[in-house]
Image 1 (spheres, rainbow, N blue to C red):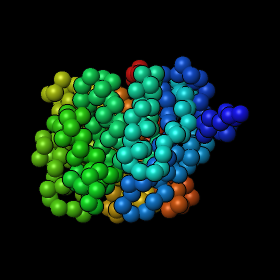
Image 2: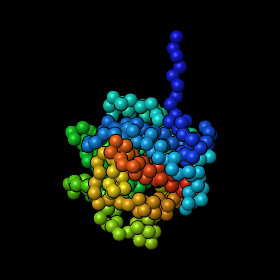
Image 3: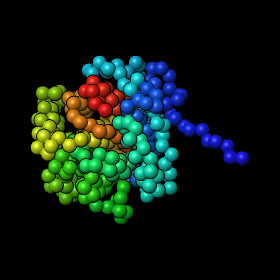
Image 4: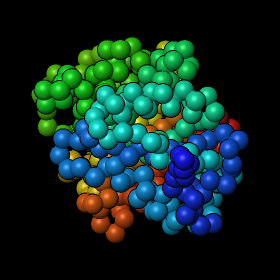
Length: 314
């Protein structure tokens, strides 16, 4: 006799103090899913443990009422658990993920907890099919992720931007990178800009913390979106956009990065854009200290969700 296997919904063990508690039920308009995959990391593995760490860190957000937006996402949110993805290889993971994506996107506005950054490419493929058009992307990262190959392999967590642009999944003129600072050849570093997009390096952002100081960045994003008919926007946030002082728990930390204040300012002040989804990736708990990285990730996801609700989005 076949014994039914239980579904593992990681939020089930969380108490009433978790802002990510799935109290919205199956009909909730927003969803969270964990992507426990790190088979494409090029330095330190461990990002497959990120979803659980982010959920645990969300305990510190108490009742979840955001101090800027004055709303809580709890009643609007359903946890879809950690998706049953194989860890045998990138192609196998993406093939299974591609089977699950259409149903999840049809049901709700999704936020994805990674996992390494290779998970973003199948999400963009599914979003284009779901929406019937390419999306704009706001990409926080230390790395440009525009390499043409992954250390001899055709795809990985450092190639997804190059692949997304070449597959026509994104409006390349509305692709914005924020926080870039890693080593790399010029062709890769400047690839998005060479394709007509925007790049705001971490060096260019030094000393800019508040809304007034970061206004030129946000104005440039808005102007570019308007010029191209205000396409829907996807947010991809690699936690290593932050300086290791704020996020030590990641596979490839890069000194000289952004502060949590900078990221929060941008997330809060851009909340009225037509976002259609978000991922937060590359949280690697084995290298974290005092849950600094997981807390930052949970706060970014919370801020994104609260901003969507405050803006009346879906």
